[in-house]
Image (cartoon, rainbow, N blue to C red; front, side, top):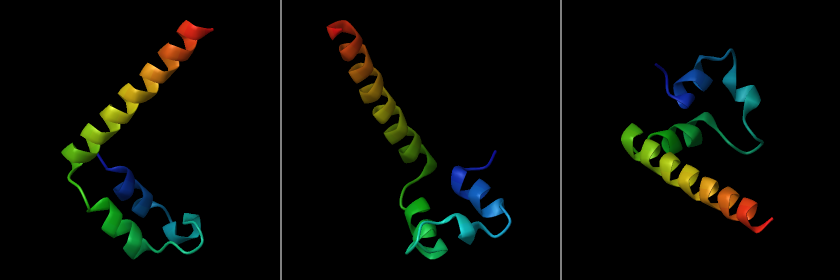
Length: 61
């Protein structure tokens, strides 16, 4: 399995898909700033918050 960062790097000329002002070095630094487990934990927390908000809005309406 590849991380999203590794998959991105596997694209032909990935630089072309970066937003203006963002470099591959900056993206690498961001990708390496936390472990895979830390990233998965943060993603799970964000999902829980999102689903809670959706549930609350459905209950209101």
